[in-house]
Image (tube, rainbow, N blue to C red):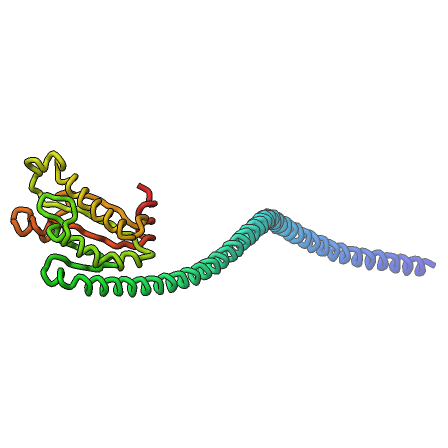
Length: 298
């Protein structure tokens, strides 16, 4: 019994000793695990702090990007509005340009039509002018042929310039010195012109009286105080005679220039120049030219 007790005691002691050894090992292991967990926890906290910091930075970037997006949206809206306004402006300008082009085309068409009309009018006028030149040339030939004796003597010249025919006669052919009545020899000269003048239908006949610059003196001054009166009286007497011979008075006119329209090549300082300036000019002009000059604004 005593041996059994001793054995039991030994068994229990051994069991307790064995139990004590096992508990101590587990504690160390747990303590190591706790240490490792603490270290892991510290790492996790550090990583968590780093992640929070990175997250805050990302939040800042996101906020910044959102601000940029808002600005871009605003710019987009402005560009859209600008684009609309530009399109409206371009459309308005396009409409205006189209209208202007249409108006210009119409003007061009009108101008082309007017140009065609003017060309036709020019052609017609050219034909009329050619016919007129032919008539003037014919009249010139007739007058030259009839007046060849006076032309040969140098008492009379006939010239034509731009459709205007001028018969230039020395006063001595028609008048005695200081007289205004046409002398018989002058009547003969005028008679050579009458038939030609009667046939004129589109001309006016202007009779011009001219003198030299010698003043009127003596008894003659009682009738003709100045060269004005003498030159006018001579022109009127020639005009009246032509009328009496049947020339249409509606195409006749008389004017006196006295000494104030000397010939460019005749100098009143010489006897020859004075003789040349004492003259009667019979000028044939187109009726339409005379009407245009009369109706022109002053």
